[in-house]
Image (cartoon, rainbow, N blue to C red; front, top):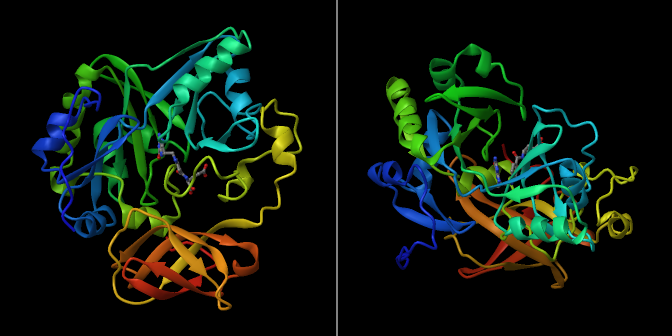
Length: 368
Ligand code: THG
């Protein structure tokens, strides 16, 4: 499908890596947190095969950080999430649902704790900086809330460990999942975490200092030449197979954490101080929930809209929010929001796609 061009302007922010991304031949872009994000280099199918077999470097600067520092930092972050932060350690990353006072999903960031009084919230695509500033002011909290000069660069794929070993050493490779360690690059302290928006394994380097971006990019490409390192980006096929949800696509303000399968990150038995706690207490048994759905037939083209689902009686059963053909699983893999009566694994459904109706089936697990 041919798509219109994006005309860039200063409102759409470039990144420390933009010149390298362009030189590497990015073919398509999206805008995420007001920032340019490549979405394909060769084709999403070719990028996908490479991601699953080698190692890629992703400019994910669009995962914008909000820094919260001060004596009330933990209290402020905790106001926005039902996940209990009391036992979070200074080197941990938590995937957290963020909700408003009604329990509606505002964002699903990765939270990095840097010190007792200091956090980076690594955002999905919504303007949480303003929400935090509003809460801090309204509650008279002793915190500073701002966007630091930090740009995440992800290193993803089965050979990511080897590339990171070469550049930063075995001690960094030994980092556990969702933990971070300090590194020094160009004399600047930064952090590196074992995390990233694929299930192929890897790290995220939180580049500090815009001016250090190209040196970091070049260092990784020089060290990884014989590992077939490529420029890459979050991959639509891999992320659906892996069940990685996308805020704005699969998750919106219309959902609770329980509906989008993030109930496991909600500590409802603790009085955490989350502003949505009371509202969420009554929403723990949702009448619809995210499910992996397999859609039969030929490869469907990607369509940026919700596709209605119906059950065998012809009644509405929910909708599909993301779908794509999977070359590895030889089927259309999809993420559905499915009504309770129809969400048992194995249930047959019918999807209204722009290419006509298709048979579909609810699965018990995502593919990866
Ligand atoms: N990394 C960083 N920031 C981010 C993302 C990221 N911000 C935007 C977006 N991605 C936020 N959304 C997600 C969604 C899923 C995961 C991370 C961020 C994720 N989930 C794993 C899973 O579901 O299997 C692990 C969760 C866990 O066990 O805690 O990784 O990717 N910096």
